[in-house]
Image (tube, rainbow, N blue to C red; front, side, top):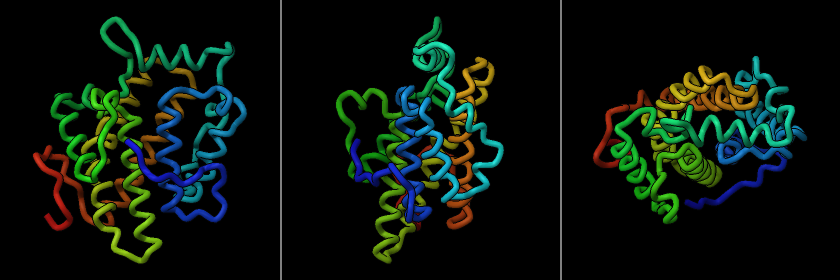
Length: 232
């Protein structure tokens, strides 16, 4: 899946809409694989702080920024912990990054997220076709939708279709299962970095869902056989 991107080296002058787009991409990168250099140097924490403050300063309250800079005592501690939590286990990972394994059945979950992607003209690579409900792919899709919202807004056009798509997708997919993932993660006693990263993502998704439901009404979480257009 590919989408236009907004560079996220600095946030000076970016609107909340542009910051939302960047933030989804930053979260997707962080959950793809831990970048110890970016974490230890504070780059990741600084990006998150800047973007969240632009969107809603309340999201930065009670955040343990030190945890988001903590790479552990060993040089490979983050990678080892990422593998323990998300990749392997006797009966599967401790805390899967696949939505359908938290709120299934997985096949139906995978089918629905693919309908969303296809509805917006997006196709997955051959590798991604096996994992359409992975957290990083769902976040990249929300990056795409928020980019579309920002682009239309800058041109003075109606953004309702992109806002409703974000609302429905968050409610039916990551907004529904990321809280479950956070609970499982807590039981696994994770490194502080992963605990804080998951909590921050959950808070952001719930904040976005509240914003979008305030604008357009409550989203339905009933699985659908097609993606509704605005007004359906």
